Image (tube, rainbow, N blue to C red):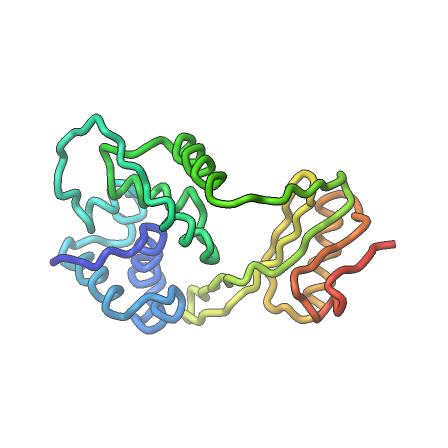
Length: 228
């Protein structure tokens, strides 16, 4: 049975939620934001192959993807396939998408003609520099801490009941070093917002001069506050 291709990062999660957590198709749809048709085809393919979660969990990504999307050709080629940089640029705007995830999908699409991850990043940066001018910002060590909620949430599945709860992801990053703290909380309400800051300060081992939130009104009505 041919299956509609879904990203590798979601394929394993579909199988885990169905075969291990025993969630319904609709629960999986709500958790991963995939169509019921795509989910059903993946589950049907797993049934056709007779795969259990224990077997799937032992497979690495390359072997798992081959089970569901066999490579149509094994022909070797000495020419590397250049990625679609415009498509990559647009995909990186999506929450939770990273260059590494997109590189993995690129490798799966061109298993014998792909660049290494380091070369992939270098080529992308070269392309990006030709597209636009950027304004360099100078950050002093310990001066600014940028804080925000990631936007994308994390689904927490209760193993016994199958109930799904959604957790928020708080992120704090020092401007000069990019030293990063992140944690999951049940809400974005003021108590969680304040407590996340306290734990972030403990994590970085100090208090910055300025905390810069991103469009958050609950804890910082003027979008920037100084720590005394």
